[in-house]
Structure formats: C-alpha cells, structure tokens
Image (tube, rainbow, N blue to C red; front, side, top):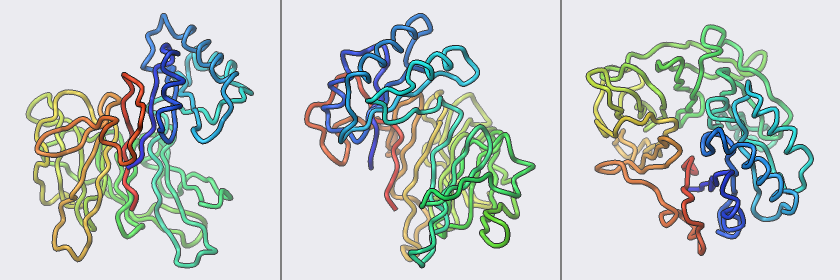
Length: 302
C-alpha cells in the first residue's frame, strides 16, 4: 500500500519535515485543510517553499481550491512556473481515483485506464497517446463520481448521482465504449458514495444507511440480489474513496480479505471496526514522520 502525505498549506514548518519523511510524495493542501481567512498566507507559504525546493526523489504537489472560486485562480497564477512544483492536484469532487482496466497480452498494445473528471468518465492509455471521454455514457455523464474495475478488466461498477450502476467496457469499434449500463438496487443504503470489486461477482460499497443517519459498508453481488454488512456503522462521516483487494477466483470465497477507505481525508482499515491508518502502518517505514500528517488514498497493487 502506497500513500502520499498531505500537509496543510498554512503549516510551512511541516513542509521540510514531510519531504524528509521518506514518503513517496508530498501534497501541500490549499483547499479544505486551510481556513478561508488563512488561504492567502498558505498560498504565499507554498510559493516560498517551492521557489527554493528542487524536485528530486520526493515530488511535491499542491492541491488548489475549488475551480469556480477566485481562490483557485489566485492559486494557479501564483504556482505557475515554480521550479519545485511537480504537479497541481485538483480539488475534491473534481477528479476520482484512476484505475487500470483492459490490459492486452501483447506488450505493444497499451493498457487502458479510466478516471472520472467533473462527473464524466474518461479513458487514457498507458503510453500517453490517448485521452478521451468514454462513449456510451451519455445518460450518466455529468454525475459519475467513482469507477471501479472488476478483476476481469472489462466490467465496471460506477457511482452515479449516489446510485450504483454496472456496465461493460468495450474497445472494439471506435475507441473505448461503455455498454449495457444497468442500475443496481442497494438494499440498506439510500445513497452510495464509494465502491470497489471484492471478487469476480461481488462488490464492496459504502454509503448512507436507509434506516438512520449513519454510514455503513456493505458487500453485495454485482446484481444486488444478495447483501450483507461488512461494517454496519462507521459513524457519520461520508466515505469518499474505498479500496478492496479482490480474492482469487479459485479461493472459493467472494469476500475481500482487505478493505480500506477514506473519510474526511483520513484513511482507515476495515477490521472488526474502522482502524485509522497511521504513518506507522505504512508498508515502507518512514524514519522521521512529521507530526500531524496523515496517510490518505490507500490502494492495492494488483
């Protein structure tokens, strides 16, 4: 499991510590980690640091404010051309987590990846030659917030306006296409916020319960006919991202051995209850972790 370290933009005293911590990447957050009256100061602190920092083994990114705001325009103008800036991260709710889908046995054929941007589903190739909106998603477009790919690389689970859908991915014909989209009823959840595949036929979903104002994680068949709780109450904070490690199809099980999720910017393991993932739980030890910095966006190498 690999994670990036987020650092509040108004805590410049932590920037150097984060870079020296041994993390794979550092993200200076100008968005929700910074109070409105401190955003100008946070922006100036990030600019000062990145003017001196030279990108090396640890890339430093900056997450900017919401795109429609004047703060974002000021962020982008201030960050332009800074020598230490490895990249700009879009604000929450704009981009989803990228996933790999179809991979050919022919090493000369690039793999196909998927990502949601602004509620739309896009495909990209591993050789950086193709980026395009996925065809066939017209009825769903504008509301897609999450995409997950089944172990076979061709079936998808999507969160669309708080509802669970499944579809088939095709690369025949003209580009990457979404086929046979079907809405799946999620018994026990009135709204879905995150999904991933547990096995070839089951998915793990997170969302708001129908019977009370609490958040839960359920497992269900991809057609919604069987449902069982994984954690029936994880509190009131919504799950923005969920990752499950699918079981082997020859294991005889359909339950993912490992599930992790993110709520309010913090990562948790799903055990008998939610267990926060701290810096000490990372696969690669960080010798000098900066105080107050939490891992986020867990994922599994499949």
